Image 1 (tube, rainbow, N blue to C red):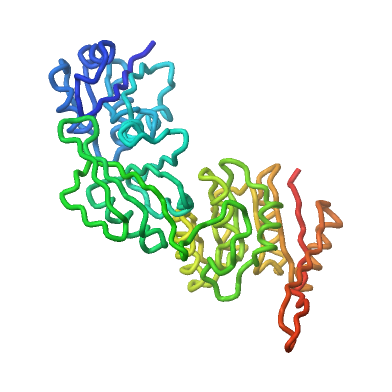
Image 2: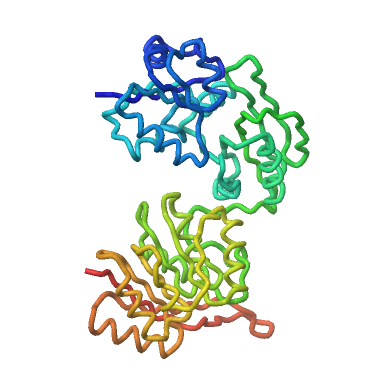
Length: 401
């Protein structure tokens, strides 16, 4: 039986709700919501009201504490599209809820602009870094980005300009569905809108300048896109390594001896659900990894400063592990094998004879696959051109039974 009703409400207030949603509000003994939502629904509320608490986890506990009463939660638009419903369902079974969605800001924005929702990128940047936009900046892309306040549109325009997309069109859709609704558009590099309503969503029509930082969708990104000091898994080897790591939805990677963070970053770019921890002993390199992560739009990459194996203690258990630099200490390989989840993948790339010897020994006892990677690039030899070989790499790939 449903003790909890979740009602999506828009700027048009009760006028935009059906009879069932209005009844859910009127019959509730206690109504939770933001101050704006409670004000919009006030004429229908007959019970007590409770504004959201900070931190929001306290509000979830407050809702749970009322489960022996009829409770209504007011939400913005569609409660299960970047909304409060997605949070509450982690603690409350869906069978105990009656949900009454309202058109989301994304739906309203798409309707105003004539943009088919199925062709768009929809992002919530509410309380999240706007760097998350970066992987989606491709010529011709259309993006709807829900942001936190009136300062968000200018920050987005600045990011677009810095990344080489300054002639993109940024439309700010304010107070959608209400009497103060407004839609204004400007070119990113000349963005100067003032008095932006805090309740807004940004629509971006992406146009790339010749120097734009476009991140290709395949693994093996150009080395020049990364800030590095030479400690980087090179492009072709990185593509082969990501293929061997075989990322799957929701998984965690350890990148041991991360260097520039290129493996962890490309792992996270493969899908928004993927997580990674970059383990790096050098503090300067760790700072560089953080900058790279932001510039590639994966600012949530976790970074642990320290030397393996000691630095591995207490980290979330990985589904996959990559060992590049710093793997010649036998303790690193032992710790990695022990920490790996059952069914997880371990990929180790050896350039030195010392690490190669360790990998050969593990291949002999544990199996897996062993691959020799030898790559040569065309280079000038005087006035002519010849092949210049890179250092060969021995790659061991193993899955934990």
